[in-house]
Amino acid sequence: MPKNKISIALLDEPDSLWAEHIYLLRAEILRQWRTGKKIFLFTSSWEGEGKSSVIVNLAASLAVAGRSVLLIDCDLRRPALSALFDLKESAGVREAVDGEGIPDTFPSPVRGLQLLPAGSMEGTAAADVLASPRLQRVLAGLGQARDVILVDSPPLSACKDALLVGKWCDGAYMVVREQRFVGTAEGHFAEDLRDEGIPLLGVVLNDSA
Image 1 (cartoon, one colour):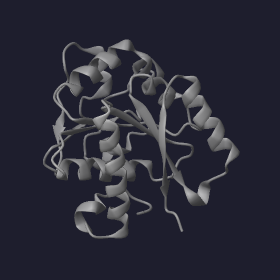
Image 2 (image 1 turned 90 degrees about the horizontal axis):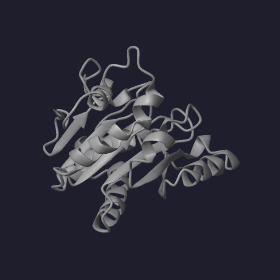
Image 3 (image 1 turned 30 degrees about the horizontal axis):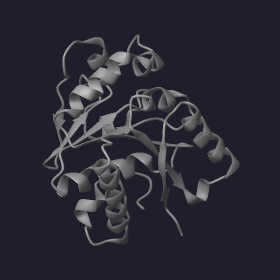
Image 4 (image 1 turned 90 degrees about the vertical axis):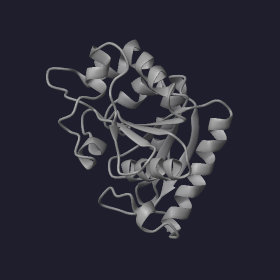
């Protein structure tokens, strides 16, 4: 899978091996969706495992397949998705938690795919935003008009933010880059998710040989 930068490679190379991996992941998400799950958390153990690249391409593939998709940047400390779509200065998750009603979302270059950026974090602790029950209500409200919501969160080794926002999701996927895989550590991070009552729905192997 692509390295070093986030891109919607699926749209440029729809017949590539990379795209085939995304189609398989899309099929898994849709299988879960048919069981009633809608809000999916994506995290990883370490920085640089390609989590954000995976989630962007997955979101695009779902939208291309005719699903209504919302991509939410809940990596409030290092909002890569907000930067990718030039939305770092736009209101987003933080403002949604502070405000009332359903927040505005932003269109993407892919029809059917909307975005909610991280928002401004000035004077606000990320952990407080993500732990707020208000965020649960925001996600539920946003889900009423979408088929699938994909939530990007920080690596578990960096902070506990994924465990906070994961409580408001229907399940989690861990992105693992083969070259960075340790084994024992990833197992402990998976247990951390389960200990918080967050179902681990699967592991996405990225950059396999």
